[in-house]
Length: 161
Length: 261
Image (cartoon, rainbow over all chains, first blue to last red; front, side, top):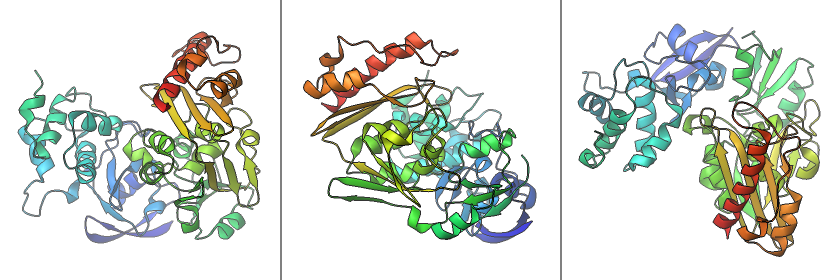
């Protein structure tokens, strides 16, 4: 066991990890931040996406030890203390960008990273960026709409039937 | 997965020392190794992380050569390899954004997955693989599926790409894995054209020399019209027959030349 320290959602957190402990296990089991989900555990589905030093990564395919000393942001770090949602979260609610919600933490973290890199993405940009995030409920249309709306663009131009 | 000891050296020298242990293996971005370990197909006693070594990271262009550190992520290559746009485009289309933020060029070349993108760029560019002990020409480096010239404990510290006059990479994606069902990298240099094919052969990446000869005398998509890529030794699986992949090689070569020219 090694004791790891990282800044998670702005707070310094420490916990113990084995060599094989994945970052997602450390977040969920050790730090009890269970908002980050494990869908496939094979780096296909993207439900486990968190930001490590500002960049989205699949936390099921990174060892916790690799994140020692890093800055981590998870879905729990999105909404304000008083519960006010971020623009991306609010848009997912407004445009019904989720059904069961299992993929949503990863979708929100990927979408947030996209809008930081590319504040006015096209519909094609959004679809391309979400290649590594799988949703089995929505058929993606409303997720795309939500992210487009969160970027401040008029969603009527891409409104799905 | 089985447990192991995790070591994170801060220099290449420390990493090389840690890898002297027979049970030790290097860990780069881990985007292939970690899934393999989860399936218990690989069980190192010690993993030596290469991602905390500053001297292994970076992209620099100098006098017609682009040098990329072994532990540089695909995302960084996509953003910074502006001296070699076809290579930057290739890096920016590997996997998905989250994978590109972890996976590294050295890891990809060391693994030599027969469907990976980077081997085709290295072979088509006549790149030089630089390790902690020597320099290896790409033509000598790739030795078959998942097999390279690297010795045990040898680390890729960087890759040197001669920048071409024109180049393009065409990947026909396997839509679930986003690996190349077949991919073709065409690079045109003053002394000739090189064409490297990934995803298609049971022996891993290879050069299509007939196309190289035709394109060296006439760099146009039409130059490939009269050629047929052989289906011998190509991969046949549920995604495509050897003949299907052979046809893809020709089609993708033509597309790459058209896009580069």
